[in-house]
Image (cartoon, rainbow, N blue to C red):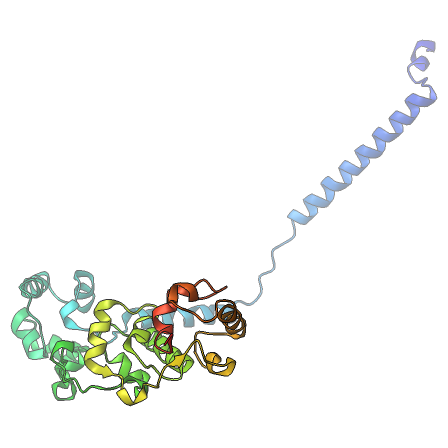
Amino acid sequence: MKNLKSLFLFNRKQQRGIFVLIILLIIVVVIYIVAINRSREHLILEDISEYQSQIDSLKNVANLRKNKIYPFNPNYITDYRGYVLGMSEAELDKLHRFRESNKWINSKKDFQNVTGVSDQWLDSISPYFKFPEWVTNPKKQNKFVPFKERKVVAKDINTATQDELKAVYGIGPALSGRIIKEREFLKGFIDMRQVRSVYGLTDSTMVQLKKHFYINSTSLDSKIALNTANRDELLSVPYFNDYLVDQLLKQRTLREGFKSWDKVVLTSRFPEEKLELIQLYLTLD
C-alpha cells in the first residue's frame, strides 16, 4: 500500500507539467468534437434556377456567334471555312486549283462554275460574298497614273502648298512640312540650293522637285555689301544673329574690311557650312 501511494507523489514542478498536459488534451478533444459536428452539417443548396438561366443564355449567344456567317471574299476560302460552310472536299480542291493558276472569282456565277456547288448552297451562302470595290463598282475607281506619266505643270515654289509639294515623287507629309518651314524662316527661297539644304531631301528627289517647281527671278534682291553694310542690313541675312553680326563688325574694323571669304569664316561662330547660302545675300565688292 505504501508503495502504491508513492506513485502519486509528485513535486511542484511535475504537478505543473501534468496540469499543462491535461489542458492540452482538453483543447484537442474540444477541437475534434467541433470538427466532427461541422462535418455532419447538411449542405444547404440555394435556388440556382436564376443562375442556370443566365448560363443557358450565354450558351445560346456563343452558339449564335459560332454559327453566324460574316461577309467574306470567296477567293480566300480555306479548308476549315469550306468545311464549316458545307463544301465538299472535291469542291474545295477545284477552288484551290483555280486560285493557284493566278485567276480570280469575281461573281457568284464564277464561283459556281469553278467549284460546281449546288444551287441550294449558292442561294444560301452567296449573299455573304464580298468582292473588292473595283470589282463591284469598276466605274467608281480612278485609274492610277504613275508619277512618270503624270502631266507636270511647273510653278513658283514660294507659292506652293503642302499638298502640291507632296505630289512630287519622294516627298511626303514630313518632308513637305520641313520645306515650308524653311521657306517661312528664309521669308521665301531665292535659290534652289536653299531648298536642297532641307534635311531629308535627296538628290533624286531634288531632280523631281525641279521638274515641278522653279524660283521666280523677280524674287532675287540685290546683294548686301559686307564691307559697307550697317548692323540692321546684316541682321536681315537669315543665317545671322546678333552675336555673329557684332563679331563681323568687329573683325571688319580690325581688318579694315574683309579682303576674302577665307577671312570672313574665321569670325567667331560663323556657320562655315552655310557659306554658299550666305553668299546668296552678301558680296565683298
